[in-house]
Image (cartoon, rainbow, N blue to C red; front, top):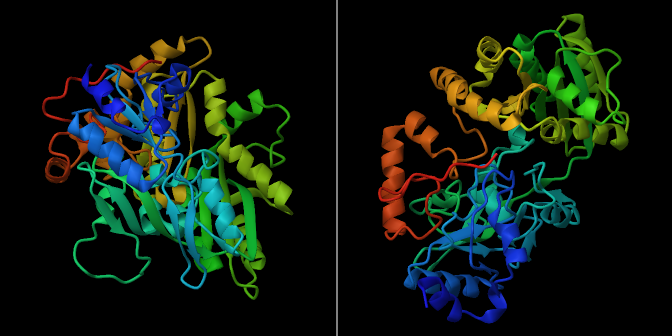
Length: 481
């Protein structure tokens, strides 16, 4: 009997899933770039069972792949192809443990679906500000493990900014409990931050204490056509000033991205009468019933149109209109898939340099692949743009992507680095960006990451091959397109 079978035989059969029709759903990544193998998936029902699972697997030398909703874009939650790793799913840890309305906080299990937490907070007239396109399936533990971003970062920050405390099962099976929902607690190292963005390589998050916010009393959403992409930062600054920093989302959508969607979904309507090259989806909200946020946005648009920053625009008249605006923005990734998929670049630079990055990166693509289709959109209010490239109709998608990633993508990443930016704004590292981290990451930071990994997981059993490359690890498998 091998190590995996020995370990599985020592665990409660109720947590072990061996049916390969079921297991296969856990071993293929969200984007279907990588298909791994696993003998079984473990689905513990409690924190104590997570500890038991980790102790048992570690004792038998079996590598562990923690998994939440399996929505990672970088194969962070996918086992390798060797079949010797075991997936540990947190989906059965899905309870809201506490909501403290007066403290604006909630304590939850890591397996809670993000949208379910939105509903739980809303029932108390509050909101959890983390908002993602995958919120109907992603789990909060995975969101924290990847330090998810989303559409509300402008006002509320990344996932790590919403965390008051964590509960984590460490690689030796011991338990770190730091769930106290205090805003001020200056009692030594802020250990919770070690596990946010670590993608399960230092331990398994089992619980989280999160900040909540008051539910907005008024929300204004506008879809705007802007005169020139160079005006992005100017318009954002003016929007913040007019609304008193009430802007929650400031999303950029290129016309080419919007057209990819409208061509494949002809039932959808264009929000404006005339097409433009550049659009902004702006949303501002306030929890006050006294502040006139509608009037502030209307005054902003009046001045912006007078000054030529905005050439056309529409303010959502009701929730149906607002939902339509957001549907267009959030379904651009689907449009890319329907048009053959895309080469994705999850890039961030300073908001003041974002327009310049988009223009220069676009020129790089036009110089090297003039027939390629640019799909540029993202959370530009916080400096994050998804600079994606879709194969032209005549190309073989797999061949185009492979060639582009080899020849052109490095030029785009180098441009971001030269501008003081990042090659990974919100997707993380996982398996697929290890080379980029080693090329563009700060050597001092990488050295500290390796020391932390060795200190907490000396045998390298916790999500091996992700974020920090093991010195003895074989080169990663090629991805499947």
